[in-house]
Image 1 (tube, rainbow over the protein chains, first blue to last red):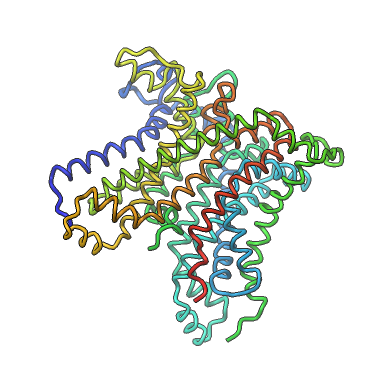
Image 2 (cartoon, chains in turn yellow, blue):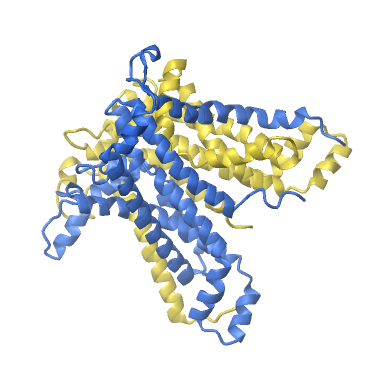
Length: 275
Length: 292
């Protein structure tokens, strides 16, 4: 293709490195701040060299409620991800493989639901969940996260199911596989990359989200991001502790990003870019 | 082999029920709630029917209009800046750059991190007393600025945080779009003696126009949904200078305890977003190559 002059290559890499620094440094700053004591945080100077301390983490982890919030976050994250994936891949398969009345209505409504602002949902859901006794309960929060994540998951997986050649399913059927066997022996293995992407996106929302969780949970059912937001008070912000908690919350998404960047990019570009 | 009619129902039923119960039904309830005056904590039976009062009041409320204008300016500035930056960077950096996969991994980090962490980090960076930004400008002898305490600078702060978080998204979409441009077309342009600028403006950009349009709409829709980062960064303040519509709804409902009004304003926001989504659907209809 095009010849690349060494100067251009150098310019490319300098720009990329600069961009990477811009993207990463706020995150590094959060981790660095979490390792400082209050007096180090409250000095107006750029200080890269400081004696790191785990004091903030000790305090955050030492509060008895931390384990409870972590457990809540894990339950909500894992359970809602599993349910979303199961329901999502079934629905995607149904939409991609069958022609039936109401198919287009379901398809378009699903697409529109994907764009609903969460603030809009928070108000009526608070009212409905209060009436139905689902408020302040983990199942109530999980149900909502599943519903919020399903539209994206269905459309992501729909694209993957379309790429599975129907001939393969027919062949399996001829070999004596029932419809259910065809689904989980032929289709599921082939859409694994899509499932991975959908799992990461769903877990990320359920793990990070805090406005709906703030409205729908209490002391017993609070998730970690809600707990973190409560360190912000009218008096001020307890920076050391809140940054420690923020860093702990950031760890799972960081791990996912590094082990599954390819799947995440598939998920981001799905629908807009072919291939 | 003909599929029995109940088979699609089995596959789609569960997902449809969940979305209907926990997404569609609440949205319809928001509409209903807008006709009632109901305070939190009181039984629903005590809710008072007020007709279209809440909707009329929302339309007459200067705070709602200010919030709508804030939202529109915020969305417009963020999306334009993110699109221009993202496209420019993608054009400058596309091609066989070795190690691109690694850089892309770093670029998606801002989108993956919890909004609460993003909001906090920027709040810390912009802090008047010990923020890194004031420390930096202090090196050049400038006096510290109360970034989040003044209306204009606070508004700039929420825009900067959004640009930081979402420009990488545009960049990644554009890189993916450019990667799909047929290289033989570019080769032909090169043989015809087209300069880099001509190739870019007349060949590459027109060929990824579809991706650009969809990315623009996705960003626009998401800009109207932003809530959490601003909640942490400024909580709408100072005054109501950074109070975007999502946050205004949240505050009306859960700080002001006026759920009926909040529901009425929600319907307003929903109409704006639905119009944008409809446009997005027209552009990228995922069912279009369906009737094979």
